[in-house]
Amino acid sequence: MALYRTDAVVLGHRNLGEADKVLTLFSPDKGKIHVVARGVRRPRSPILAGTQLFCYSNFLILENKSLDSVSQCEIKESFFRIRQSLEAVAYGLYFAELLRASTPLEDKNKQLFDFFLKTMYLLQESENPEVLSRIYEIKLLALNGFTPELFRCVNCGKKNFNIIYFSPSMGGILCRDCIEKDKKAVNITTDTLNVMRKMLTKTYEELEDIEIKEYTKQQLQEILELFIEYHIDKKLKTTQFIKDVQSFHS
Image (tube, rainbow, N blue to C red; front, side, top):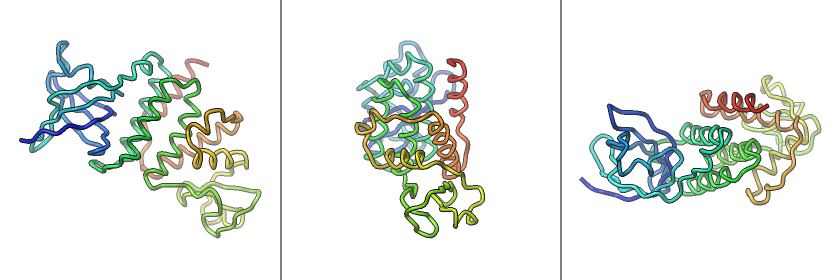
């Protein structure tokens, strides 16, 4: 049986038997993979620290006929500061769940890995994880091949119009003349559309000081949640956890 090394971020885990865990890792070399961490639930396990949720570690993995297993791991970044804030934990869980849900197994995508890792570093320092979350959502969808059409009507191609609708099922904006194509499309403001365009086309660094009105934040959350649910065909559990945490802090 062969051994291989890979850097990876721990996206999730579940218990297996009395002392093991099945980890979901995201790697630049392998994409999303499932591996067994044997004995990791024992207090003195040498791989305990590096297999914690959100950890970015270098793994030595043993190939098996069924699930590969972790032989060694060395922490590169623990993201411990995320775990010091309940709000940051909630968003970290959401970011990880969205990546898991939108990414097929063993689909190598180094660009997506680098983007996710950068997002986690930013979350660790962020004072506004809600805005970071909206940027992450729209860029993650684009990297997974679901780039929304935000610059012309997705049906007729018209570029300039004042009454704007967003259609999750058609994947972009609709003008008033084309609203019959999707009667479930959501009416959005010009401000919301402009913010979405910036989030899609600009870098995290360029968006660092972006200012968003409260109503626009609400509209962005609504339409991106609908867009995500349509494309991954499931409701993410962590979205409610974020809402619960926000209610607790309000």
